[in-house]
Image (cartoon, rainbow over all chains, first blue to last red; front, side, top):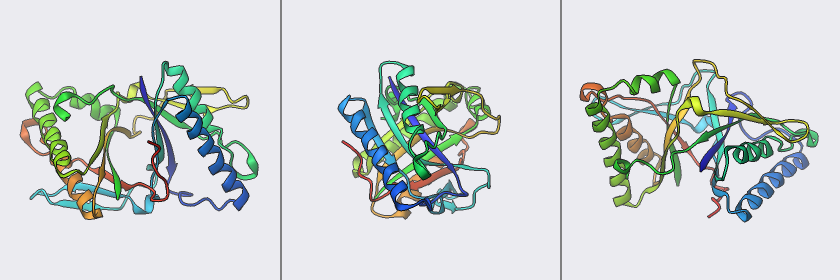
Length: 130
Length: 130
């Protein structure tokens, strides 16, 4: 069963963290190690980081179908910072991996304990979407 | 350059969609299917994935002992990712044009939903583990 693990950030504070270099390196090394473990266990489907919210656009089709873009979001909007898609045997395993992501070290090496949203993804897109 | 196009909505909007006439839902899905077909033909398609309903979402944090703590209670206004498309395109404008096509997918009575699609670029420095 496939799950997506989503790391969200608020717009405030989004961007390259102003942490000491060593803390930032420890954080990145932790994430790389986690990805490596998931790859070795065969559970990693994909992992991506997204560009920062200041580069996000909201697009709607205008009357003529042409894109109408907007970059103004409510203050309270949560932005996706990155995601992992994992293929696991049980929901509990997906939660355990999410807890591992949540425990990534922040400033001073303390676990961030950030919330990770976990959602089942449909096993295959409906045939009409292919 | 890779972009993710995200369709979001609340549990209320998902419940609303479920009350559409079957014919309207079929037409909607066929339009989205045609977008994907077009992307496959141009070689811009990377992935598309619908997610299970928001009511199946959990938020996970790692606690002191590293064990997962899960919670599934969200504010009514919370926007959830409903599905996404990953495209590999030559320009940001092209990513926005594809988002507009998705936005123009017909809703009830064949009227375009014009729903907002969030367009975000992947971090260039990160490479997806294959």
